[in-house]
Each structure stands twice: as C-alpha cells, then as structure tokens.
Amino acid sequence: MSEKENVIRNEQEDDVLSSALAKKLNVDAPVFVPSFGLSSNLNHTAEESKESIAVCDDWETRDLEEDEDLDDGEFDDDCEEEVGEQEVAGVDGNEPSAIKAKAKAKRKGKKMSESSDGGVKKEHVNIVFIGHVDAGKSTIGGQLLYLTGMVDKRTLEKYEREAKEKNRESWYLSWALDTNQEERDKGKTVEVGRAFFETEHKHFTLLDAPGHRGYVANMIGGAQQADLAVLVISGRKGEFETGFERGGQTREHAMLAKTAGVKHMIVLINKMDDPTVEWKEDRYNECKEKLLPYLKKCNFNPKTEVFFMPCSGITGAFLKDVPDESVCSWYRGPSFLDYIDQLPSFSRHIEGPFRMPVIDKYKDMGSVVRGKVESGNCRKGSQLMLMPNRKAVEVLQLLSDENEVNQVNSGENVTIKLKGVEEEEVSSGFVLCDISAPCNVGRLFDAQVVILEHKSIICPGYSAVLHIHAAVEEVIVKAILCLIDKKTGEKIKNKVRFVKQDQIAIMRLECVGGLICMETFSQFPQMGRFVLRDEGKTIAVGKVLRVVE
Image (spheres, rainbow, N blue to C red):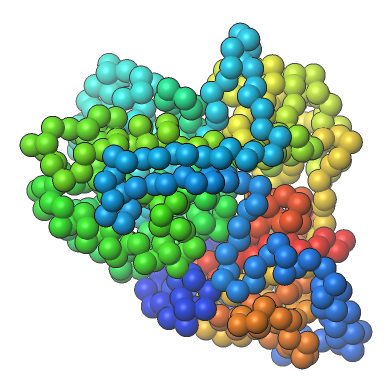
C-alpha cells in the first residue's frame, strides 16, 4: 500500500481526454497507461465461469434497474438532499439576486435537535473547498473565518507578520487553515484543513482540501465528508487555463466530488481583483462557459445544483458583503455567506442505526476518534460497536466542533472519546456502529464498476487502490461477472475475460488486507460508493451491490 501511494504521488498528469467516455458516461478524465503487468494465466476456471453466470442471473431478479441507473454513470443518492422546487438563479444568465429556496423539505425522519443549553441547534452542514493548487482555497477559507468572527484581527496581523518574514505576504490568510509548518513553508495544503463557522441559520464545518495532484487521496477523504462543495477557480490570466485545460486538478476534483455524493456545488471564480482581470465580466463569463459543459458531463444539474459567483479571497469581496458598483457593477449578489445560509436543508438518516466511519484517531487521556456521523445518533454513555474488529465500546465524551455536547446526530462532524479500546486498535476506515445493528464487513464483494479511463484491458488479477468512505485499501479483481450494455442497460451474458475503457461491468473484488467495513449502495449510499485509483489517476467509480464474504 505505501509503495503504491508513493507511486500515486509521483505520477504526472495526462491531459488527453476520452471523447467516447464523455458521450456515453457523462464523465471526462485523462487517459492513463498502467504499469502493472497482468499474468497471462489469470483466466476463469470452469467453476468460476459457472459462478459468474449464476451471479449475473441472480442480478436479473434483483432491483438493479430500479434504484441504480446504469446508463449515465451517475451515482445518485436517494437519501440525500431533495430540493423539490428549489430554483437557483444566476447560472444561465438569470438575475443572481433572485434566489428562491422553495424547498419541499421531504426529509426522512428529519428532526430539529436540541443543544446542550436547551435551545435549538442550527443545521450542521459540511462544506469542502476543492480546486487546482493555488486557486485560493485556503485564502478564501481564512477570509471566511475572519469575516464570521472565528479568527480575530490580532491573529491575522500576527500571521501577516510571520508570512512576510518568509516572503509569503499574500499567503497570510491561508495560515488560518494551513496550520502545520510544512504547509506554511511550501505554501500549499497537504492535509485536509478543518475549521468551523456559523451563519444566521446554519453551522458549517469547513474542509479545506489540498489541490496538488500528489494529494488527491486526501482530497477524496475531504469530499466524502461533504454535503456541499465549493469549486474554487482562479480567474487570473493563465491560472484558470493551467487548472482546467492543461492537466490540472479542476476537472478531476469536480468529478470526484460528484462521485463522493456531493449534490450541490458553488463555483467561486476567485482573484477577480487581479490586474490581469480587474473585475471584467468577459473573463468571468469565459471561465463559466468553459466550466458549465464539463460540470454537466459530471451529472451536475446546472439549474438546481450549480451556482456561479465572482469573488476576491484577498479583499473578501462578495464573500460576506457585496461591494460598491464601482468595484463590480454586473454582479449584485447574493454574497457567498448569504447564499449558503439560504440553501434548503439536507436530508439525514436521523432514524437509522448509528454509523460513523473513523477518519482520524489519536490518544488524549484515552482513545479518541473523529468522523462524520452518516446515520442515526448517539449520546454520552451510549454503548457502540467498533467494526470490523467487533470491539464493544462506551462513549465517554462527545465534541461537535470543539464544543462538548450530550448528543450528536447524522450529518455532524464529531470527536468521540471511547472506553474499551486502545488507540492502536483503531484505524482509519473503521466504523462506529449501533451495537444491535452493526455494519456489514467483508473482504469479497460484487460491485457495479464504470471504467472511466484505462488504455489497456483490465483482467482478473488486476489491482488498484479502493477509496470507500474513510477506508483506503488495495483490491484485486477476482472475476468479471458480466458486462452492462450502455445503450439498453441490459446485462450481457457472454463469457467475459476482460473489460476496457468506457465499459460498465459487474465485478467481484477482493480486499488484499482482509475485512473492511462496507454497505450496499441501496442501503447506505455513503458507505457503498467507491473510487478506484491507480498510478495517480482515477480509473473507475463504482457502488457495492452485494457483500459476498
């Protein structure tokens, strides 16, 4: 695993795109040449061939066509936001100030929870900032923390002095999120930064994802926790083109966000105050017109799921307040904070069994784990099960964004102190579960897989890195059970020895490291969708259909 991740970090991006993929699957990705040699003797045995046919026949009788559309490659989550008649203006030339958040809050089991002081808690929303390196994600994040009162002026002045000493005067705002010395010295985000801020109606956990191609694995971890994505684009001449058209990360980040289950995206066209731009509407429209077709290919609905706005991370223009018309006359709002505060509520699995994938763990007077609650709720003193090692644990303390609380609910990013398990017994990708309804675990599973890019064929024996919820594991293709006809959605029952780019297949995958936690996509979408990566490229996306063993 470590050697494979090192290869991933050192691989160079390729900007060649597959037009056939764009037409058939509505996704776009760089072409990729694998370095793995495939053994010629890894063919189906007679027993495996019979098993493949049996499994494909089994899927004929299941509800695969009902809740898993195979034609467009989209991985919709029917348990996420249902916005009803929401209209988001400002995408296709409408007046951007005309926001109508008429949401029919069809929320399964939605309840307003109470805070520890007896008041009503604001809705908790996880927002991830993604985009190419140096687009200004951390600077915008730092500016938002300052504008919402989470970082005071004195602290910013301290950061400014320290940044000036390192000849990085323009980076001081990003230091509110880039807190470790390596990130400050290099001037780039490595780990997913985490902070929080509040608006009038909502409480946000801000996740600042790295933009460098060497840290895409970390970016995926941030996107998988998010309800809402902010794609930050540099409007500066040359920088937008580098990020979008020359093998940059803009395209891959947008596609990965959609695959991770993000249903709504805000595109911030940053650095509009730069001397090469000077708030010119033509430049804004140029960036927007190039981005929109690609976001459509990623299956974002431009009318209800995408919103564009200009901004300046350095000056804060359009982040909290709308500047005077002398600065920008052609866009009159809403501001970024106004817009996200008025978004309709997200659907949560409040009544489901407790599920929290472990993102991080550490020792602090006991074992402490951190993650996003994907389902259910728990209270201080609750008895939970840690999977896959089946350790019974007790909740000693609950923290929601550094504040101690008595209860946490689905959708919240939380820190939990546990009794009954040692810190070294916990790993990222483990899942805290309801003790009476633990999650599924397995090492062998069947999945629907969409091959996004791969120059050579994929045969049984091929290996890649699996990213599923907070887990990262190496997997091997054990068998290709059947192909899916992209035009009809029907299963092709011919014996399948390999798959290639642009194809959809049902595969049997095996985790090399043993048991991992997973759920079928139909039951828990956030724990049943995954990404396959190899040689620094996203080669496929998929969803778990059945846990075999």
